[in-house]
Length: 197
Image (cartoon, rainbow, N blue to C red; front, side, top):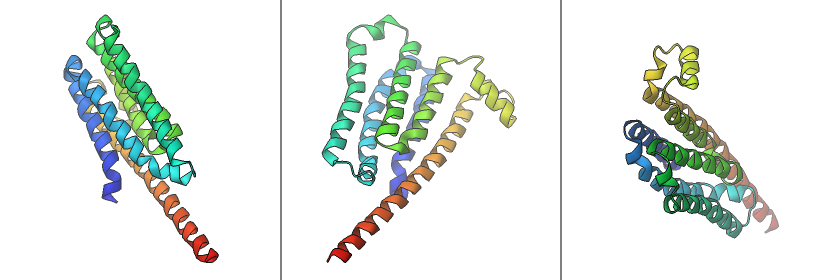
């Protein structure tokens, strides 16, 4: 069970660390966020494999969709770096754009390829929003009022860790339900084979 949770742990912990680093030095973390895309893509490819089995999708078609999906983001980031976009805006804006691109690409991957990434993608959107609006953030004010957190504006890292934990728990429930469906399908397939023999 711990092995199946490891990809989710890697994603959420890495995102929290990158968020923390970005709060201190937006310009210095751009490349880390770009490298993080490869980690997310690899985890999406591997963890979505079982979901493609559940939906009876042809494995070759699943691989093609994954390559096109993540390849589009890699291409977009490459073009942004080499066609002057990165130099045209400041580091905070560019890093925020990169995080939003990663978040929404991950959200699309969750919807079309691997639903286990859904809550992680929402967490990335949350992180991007916190970095884009560091002062007088409406979401932080709402969270502070809702949960009685004094000075929520100054506790962005603590709140982001809390949101990451909630996202991880929700992702774990999705993972467990998919593992149950996968086990049920495999048992059903074995019963059919036994009846046919």
